[in-house]
Length: 176
Image (tube, rainbow, N blue to C red):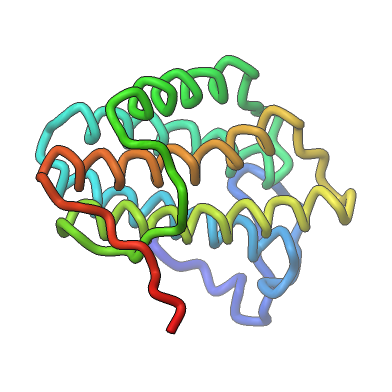
């Protein structure tokens, strides 16, 4: 059944957890934002059309489910190696690209724009998870925080790489 009616009073629970909490709580906000990132990465993955980017995004989606479980209070955790995997991908991409000397206006290809938007969503998710960690209601591992911090860097690198491979020159802001 897709609905239970248990949340009609403004409370919810996490999968496999008996404790109910407000839908406006920091935990609910973090879980919802992580879900938003994960769902949007599904859209981006389709636009990546079964490429290496698509495979990378699928791996990220799987890791985000583990992070969601951790934030919900389950005994699930991201290992340190997951952030290192993102670092390896980022480092490899950076060898193909000109160095960053300024901010860039989002755009270029459709895929690069979607990746850049996903980056902003992942930054928001990171802020929400840090908020939960700061409250201390749920213990969030340092590996999870590192992973979320690297995720936005990965998405930025993938956006830049996508434009670069398409021959699109990055446009710096004019600050007019």
